[in-house]
Length: 232
Image 1 (tube, helix red, strand yellow):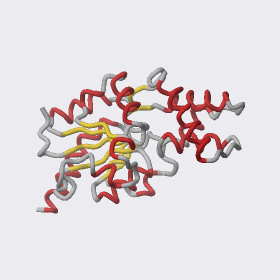
Image 2 (tube, rainbow, N blue to C red):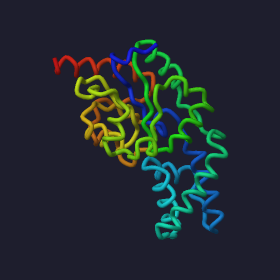
Image 3 (tube, helix red, strand yellow):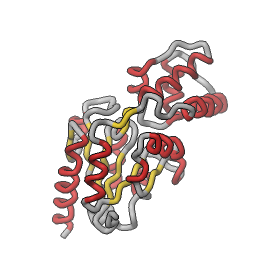
């Protein structure tokens, strides 16, 4: 079993471990169709993912010229969730090497966590469908602690007390939200180049920029080892 004292590797979910855009896009397009609006498609949805379901729905409607007051938007969000949870994993797939990387990290003694702006139940359901859920000690959505990335509290509450201060944590994510969150929390961030970022991640200067999940273990060891040496 992982030794929690060694440290925690925190993963974002959508765009980092799993390409979930096709199922999110289908749910969004179904919602739009119910309202007589044109679909945004998978490519359109990819540009909107990362800030939570409410923002995905708001942005999708806005893209089609429909701006809703808060109470009506809340109804639309609830409808989206109902549509999405009927097919969490119909088209979604883990990125290559996801299962192997998680196994490698666990065998090396790392505690694994998911910190996502997807609702916890949906995140758990998706991970379970794809056979990845058993790898994680915790899955935290915005409803888990009542806070969402990029607020650093979302990330910090995923960690055992003192972990960040001791330099024993790293975040693996794919977007500006993840980089900003890690920076605010004071922990290193590994950026995945294949995800849903809205701008080139190199511009954000993450601590490491990777092109495959196979690189995660090496970068975790490098970054946490270096940080712990600096902290003494």
